[in-house]
Image (cartoon, rainbow, N blue to C red; front, side):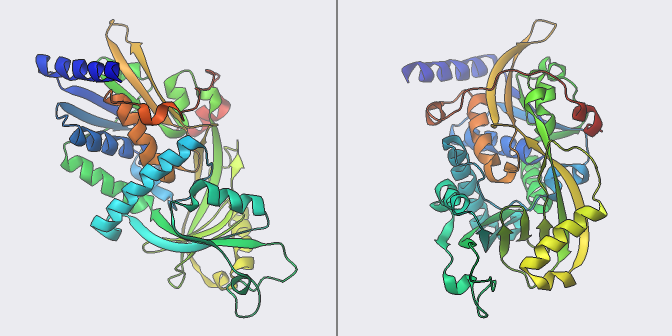
Length: 387
């Protein structure tokens, strides 16, 4: 502990003795890049660190990136200890934004239900986040079965269900809110394609890799550990629908501030077709209408196909690199969130911010997973999807 404090004091002394501001570049304008910048500033304020500057690089307009089209229901897929830590920190941030800004932040308080034929899957939900969200409980028989129930399921079914209250952080509103806040604090945004982290190493002291699906390729040593997970969401006009509803985690509706998201497909490893097909819409609609027949009458507002950044575990790691000129710079990776970017993003960003600012890692040392072996194999999908 004493060594960590000494190193941190030396780090601060070096900054102030030279009058040098810590120059930080972040690659990626999605929810992870924006959350990382937010977390760095949050921690810097807490630790009284003022000598820093942040610039975020992105090469696609916001309308074309995955984060723009996500409903962002808080629910943890994998209940590993590190994910629980990330989830707790994210939930705390969402609760703070909800209390201070309400829906103006893109955060919305919403209740709903998950149905499944698998008791083990429902038990895993309780283990992963049941003590974190609000009002978590099992659905009763009177809520599941019979003509006065919510779902009128046949009594001979093995289907069970849970209820809880949580937050959504819809990308359409949440990301612009974060960006506006960052700009007001002096963060710069630059539209530019970054093909190598070394491109930024000459100019910046720290480069954060928050490039999502392409984070592994940008890192240069991890492309083979990444895989796209094709997903489709349909945005519909259903103003009466106020509760989220999941059936076995792939047939879903999530109400947000001014619409309802209906989905989805989870096609692991798929990178085509890169548009929403008639079969996608028919498949999703037919599955969901069986749950709620009223949705046969909804009007479709828009649809979107996106590719979640699949990886066995989120990569939050730090390394020192050297550019051809001989200058050394720090790289901090923060990518590979799968379908949990909005649920775990601020939490992993806090972890990454500790690495950026050389703060204590005591909260992570016992629960952080071992890094995956390097795999620099460049899959075919990288060239196809990187437009």
